Image 1 (cartoon, helix red, strand yellow):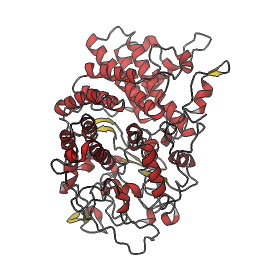
Image 2 (cartoon, rainbow, N blue to C red):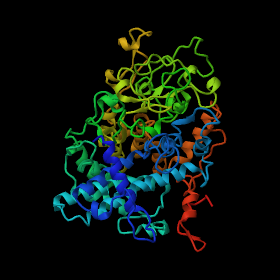
Image 3 (tube, rainbow, N blue to C red):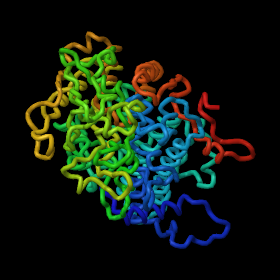
Image 4 (cartoon, rainbow, N blue to C red):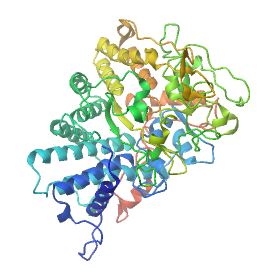
Length: 600
């Protein structure tokens, strides 16, 4: 479902009325829609479209401001700052003077006054507000059939579950505000209860009441809700409950457009607007380029900074540079398997400090091919844009600030840029959907649940499905037939020494539960890199402190940006409650919000 702009505007205007504070005079706001006008099937569905529209964190008529009043990238649904940079997969990039608030987040020195946190908080709660408006008006609508009522409510509750899942993994204790709470008391709600049971309830209701398929592909279905419920159980360490639902999802699940869940043959099809909404798409935020508004608000605006800089064809802005630690993770041994314990002892060769007009030969030792669909590195084809030239595309001189690499999964193809790129702003937008959950993620979450329950053979089967797809030669990056005209096509010569295999029979059993989990966790790093999951995975596994402090120790010898970084367990597992929100919740000298431990 690519939401028409005029419908989105109508829905948002309606939502604005339903969540606004009442004035002393009971006079309807001019140009707004009353509850009486909206309390019908068409009005409720318009509000629901507005609740979907909030998924991308954008609500504006131009520029790069999000609905919270902050910059669009501060609340990007990709979580490139909060999940990937904070998880050690990437550096902020650019240079030290640009967006320094991200450096503080990356080093875990940020406090509650960091404006990024307030933007994210307000943006996600806007989504909550919109879902509550749907449910509130739905209860008043008299022309909605019971069956339709349940489906509409299920979509709203799925979306609310998603928004609260975002809030929960960011801040842990957050206030639960639902459709029964009056807007005038919303700011006074405490954040003292664990909201996992309520998130579970929303996803369970959605799973039980959503249809298997939808006529509009962007609307969620039963199997997306089931998957999100299983993911919730996994975060709660309820492994048996998670496994039971993952079994159903893997065995029976289909996409909203009726495709049986399966890994797509080509890994990069998950990151190309021309091949999105495929069999691997469980829950994706729908993006659209060139929608007629003259803005990139619907075109992944939250990721607009994350393109190569300098002499690149993308204009701006040099952010989100993959780390050397991540690159090293793709090194494989003589058997095509990863180095789980000492991958940084087998570093991937890079061109740091080598000018683009000086010779450089890329790494020639064995590598997992997913490195070159994830990381842009010198001498390797950058999709169909030509070989990455190295320093000429990196913003900081000498590549010392954030390293030599560029992001890749968010980059549109040169051949289809007229259709899927959006140049209506000072930095690009794209029509590439934002994957929240894709089927490879499902298989690896299911593997984790199986391993936690001692089912190591089944866990290995799921991991090997993911690795087998990566090992298919169709997923190798090949050299250009003519480097001067990359659109002319490719040769049959791989661009690097790709070597990857599945784990041999019995390997997980021989590793034991702890070793099998280590392999699963590492596979998530390889498969889902730069997709916003890493920090939240490390926290829920209880491995954030040793993993991230080792990352700081290693990566700080290569770049200058994260020197002084340190993760403290018990404090940095969650981000600080935004000070602005604590201040707004204050009444009679007391705040209803309690700050997270360690930030007072």
